[in-house]
Length: 92
Image: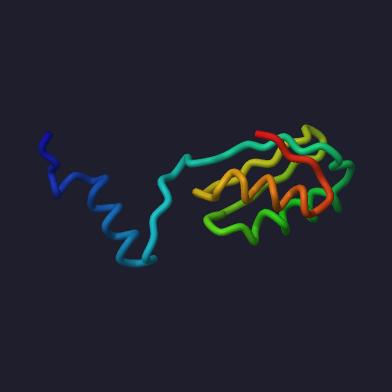
């Protein structure tokens, strides 16, 4: 297989590495189910805990659905551990 170095994807990839030193493919997300989130404050607690995990680009918790969507390339074990450490129970 031959790779065209002028492909738009390759150019964007190289630009992101040059500008940021890292690159996360768009659309890389993980959804966790979280038990125990009952209010907006719980959402904030979970979001703050997950935001500190290496590789996380963004996090959005929803207590009504009991879910958290994480963008980036973090370790699943680290995500679950962060949520558990915050006092909630997470599963993938």
